[in-house]
Length: 364
Ligand SMILES: [Fe+2]
Ligand SMILES: [Fe+2]
Image (cartoon, rainbow, N blue to C red):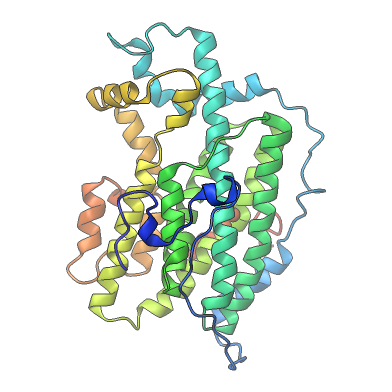
């Protein structure tokens, strides 16, 4: 299967409904082969270097972060007011469905959006943990198995820190956004090992790296700021792992196979773009989400467009580095132009940037 389904989880996909497990466990069938390799020779210089970097850049979530920090949730919400500026058009325009909201409601909204965003980071991190476990099994190269094993540990740490922050500091959590959830399901169930990489390492983690950077820039709360900075150090390596591995693999694919990857990347980008609507936040605040969606559609905000496109500033140069933008007749370039994200193609690609982003063991 190449294209990503546009609908949410369906029964034909053999995805077990979460009710099967009382809503706690969600199961997905993965059809990939588990591969042994008897070729233990170290031959991929880029991956060898990355693996060595990963070994010296480990950090301990329990002892390296200032968990004793008292977090003032209202102050944190104020730090992040800029991240919801794009909703300002809901404040002032005539017939706004939120015309009656006062400062108190807006602050509450900002705090909820913060919890929602961190919850999506948390669930995405678990997706990354599962995908990397899969990659250690399905990738045929020993250097990639070694590296992926370090990433499994990184992702466990990321799930740990976001879960702890939400539970101890915000005392709040949201469920996974359906768009993100179905994208993760699609990535995990695909039997081709490189699709796990493309979906997770390039698309989901590329977006996460930009989103973490954006939140890190806005936040002054010291625990969250440090947590995000450490997670970013790891994430940059993870995206670089995807770029280095796929660059080699894609050079051996035929044009039909490359087109399938281009289509996958485009549909994943669409899904990631659509994940921004936080339906459950509006519901929790007693606002009809449909009304908000309709209003936003009729009152488009250029600031919102810019914010959303910025989150693709890591994905697009990495797709370019992989040769996906211009392969064939440049199909993906045209598609990225259509959704307004092509302007990032010449930004630094993450296979170059990861050493600069390392806050734990920076280059000497
Ligand atoms: Fe992660
Ligand atoms: Fe990651």
